[in-house]
Image 1 (cartoon, rainbow, N blue to C red):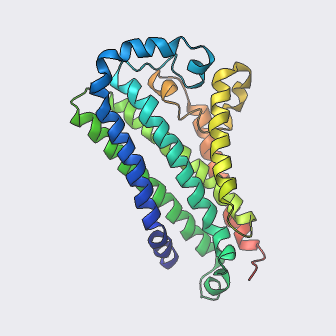
Image 2: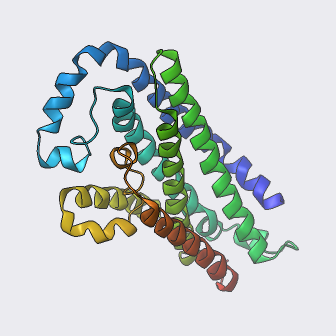
Amino acid sequence: MTVFRKEMRAGAAGLLVWTAVIGGLMAMCVGMYPSFADSMDDVSALFAGMGGFSAAFGLDKLGFGSVMGFYGTECGNILGLGGAFFAALTAMGMLAGEEGGHTAEFLLTHPVSRRRIAVEKLAALAAMILALNLACLACGAGGVLAIGEEAEWGDLLRYHGALLLMQLETGGLCFALSSLLRRSSYGMAIGLAAGLYFLGLMINLDPGLEPLRFVTPYYYADAARIFAGEALSGPILAGCLLGALSACFGLWRYGRKDIAA
């Protein structure tokens, strides 16, 4: 597991920074809830009546009046976007970064197959995404406990599980893209993650786009749908399949790719 350890060491600093920023913001948002709790019902009613804006962000279903509604709206967006950006950027540099940094010729001279290199890089990506989400779950849940609020822990865990799957799917897509490129394109990674996010908002706005729920992971990682108990098994299975196929394509493509020095 030499490549795995090398990738974990190389990504440790970035992982710590992203975790500190996202987890810190989540804990801070939860800590602010008691200060606004008395006025949250009025704020929730205001946002619920804002038409398309409310529908896009699920505010017509998920109110600020409860700690879970506040958590899903504020903390969920922080981890949903921040985690997706982390997964996309990390995955994009996994394979293409070797050619762009001119380290591929050094790596591939070692008695390790290309397939093993790619598999260990993919395992490191999954491990870093998992570590980020576990730390952020601890920050969010710890914040709820610290302010003494009652939470629906089953819904909370399901929500964080959906966010984890969403980030793994995004990472798989960018891992596949990385296998096609000669050098890392971080703008493409950010664009893909942001595009999936805005596609989720568009589905909320226009019911005619409902078939696209199988394309964007933000559909099944939507707090409003999860806390409302909607059936999301179809989009979740489609997302897992898409992420797994993308990761497998990346492994296959890297094994057959003409690596430039």
